[in-house]
Length: 267
Image (cartoon, rainbow, N blue to C red; front, side):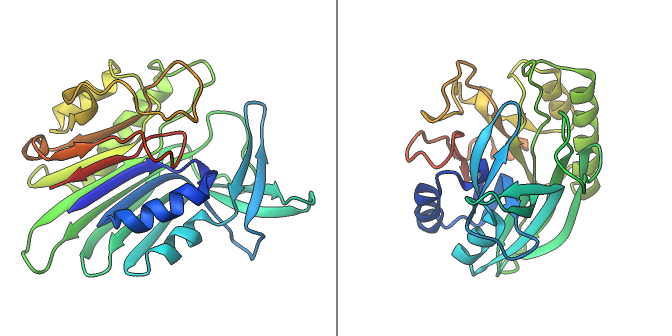
């Protein structure tokens, strides 16, 4: 099984991302920073806030779902607001998480919930914005083997990635949601753009529940690509149950499909 996690950056480098997804053919794909168009929209919309000015795919969730017709798609919205097309015309847009599982696999349990705040239906608002999480129990009917897979997008704080009370609460909420699906037995994977540093207390908490960080386990020092020009290179993590520590794990810098590198686990 090949499980992939990536902060997709709203599909900003779609010309690289699309063929990469098709060629990779993941069994389970977890994407953060996913857009969804609740109404028909042009292909691209613009997002602007005090920190960013981004051109995004209007419906990245639909785009990826069309690339993976043999996968089951699930979307978890965190916010809905108004973006603008190239002519300045407003268009509604949702922002959240996307999860795709190969169609022949059985998604026997799935939970979508919030690790911070609740759904914002009226715009993006001040930081930190609402954050969602998806967790699924996936069974291969041919073998009966199952794996629990989850991901979330951690809080963004303009002050940095240090531990804060809000992030500590987010960790506890993530543990609660994940444990609602995973009973501590069998294979488990928890991934995403956590927006944390490797020495965060969150990883001690995750180890207590039986999940181990592959980034530090493999001595990886950079989870960003050349499209990201800031010096802090940590953002993305993949945690696994102990039996998966020896699985093949890759954090490729090329091709640049986002300003984040993908996390690829194969076992």
